[in-house]
Amino acid sequence: MSYDFDLFVVGAGSGGVRAARLAAMGGARVAVAEADRVGGTCVIRGCVPKKFMVYASEFAHVFEDAKGFGWTIGETSFDWAQFIGRKDDEIARLSGIYSTNLKKAGADIVHGRAKFIDAHTLEITGEDGKTSKITADKVLIATGGQVHMPDLPGIEHAISSNECFHLEALPKSIAVVGGGYIAVEFAGIFAGLGVDTTLIYRGPNILRGFDEDVRVHLADEMEKRGVRIILSATPESIEKTDAGLIMHLDGHTTPCETEAVMFATGRRAATVDLGLDKAGVKTNEDGTIVVDDFSQTSADNIWAIGDVTGRINLTPVAIREAVAFAETVFHDRPLAFDHDCVPTAVFSQPPVGVVGLSESEARHEHRRVDIYLARFRPMKVAFKGGDERTLMKLVVAQDTQKVVGVHIVGADAPEMIQLAAIAVKMGVTKQQWDMTCALHPTAAEELVTMREKYVPPELA
Image 1 (cartoon, rainbow, N blue to C red):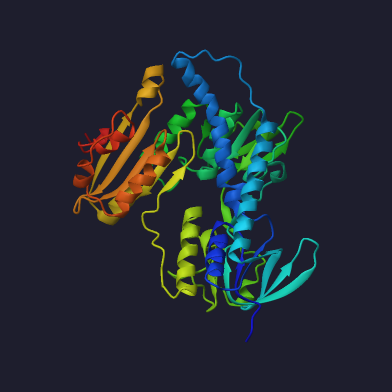
Image 2: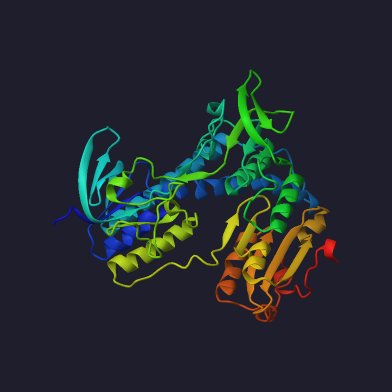
């Protein structure tokens, strides 16, 4: 049978674009469908604009630090409208680059929402509502994830991370609901920009799934920077008043009163209305697509990568999965991306950098582990008389002495963890780690100078 395309990609995010480009440059006839702007969540309403907001909010801390080093700082102010305008311009520029690179590679861009009719046929609905059909030999699903808002009374008064990038003005106060990456990052952003910020999470501490020492340390440091954290609290309803919003919390007699409420309580795989059942593509109960090690779905000619599969929801992972897909399917070089020891960063304030296992995970997997932990005031903080502290933690498997986890909370943690990840991925032992000469004076030198095993105070 003759098809319109050799490969049709559903979704023009970082993963979909990379796969489309690589396949097209190899000579395949490729098209990409995108219902929004090219670039996906990361570029348009995720990692990139969020990082710009982190940068903007950090200047408040920089001004305070400068005073401790002898600088006289005059009156400062922040122009939200100017920042948003520049952010929008930069996002438009980046989206344009993604589109240009697709076209240069020889891939077609189809503007519209794609839906399967069968495994080889898709219906495209354009912005004008008109539909068309295309056929493809192979299909790659890279639709990513989408914001999930809970069903509770008054939820229409709340915003999500999507709307945060387009607020007409900064609120005077805000309650951020959630305890994951997005919630703690936006709590730091708003607090840094001078907004009275409250973080509300249903669990016993923020960043579920991270090392316990990291969770406790970050919460303490965020509170030092002015973020009020309310734990073990679940929103029951939101009430709009003339003064703002009142959020009633389960288990708390005192409601939370703020000008704005943002929910960051998780994302869902964007698989609704894709017609996956008609294509024979199986999904898990949470809507994520079932794939094998080579990202192939239950349909012989359909693959899926990125957040839509629910494996590791990080942009660089989607890109690496895209490369593996192209190598396997279009270059006859079978390649499965190894999801082990993927570094991750939380751009909270202070930021977090992690690679490998938490202490709890390591004890389950290796049973006996050695822990090396340091908490200290960096020299910059000590000089200005601050009380912020950095946390560094190594988790070592006792039997092999391999470093199986590195955890950092503090300035430049994401930059440090990227390089630490190389060593961990290569299976470095603690003895080899210790042979590395320290670079002085840096905070990073603490990573290679921890010699004494850590014993919790309650066990000492």
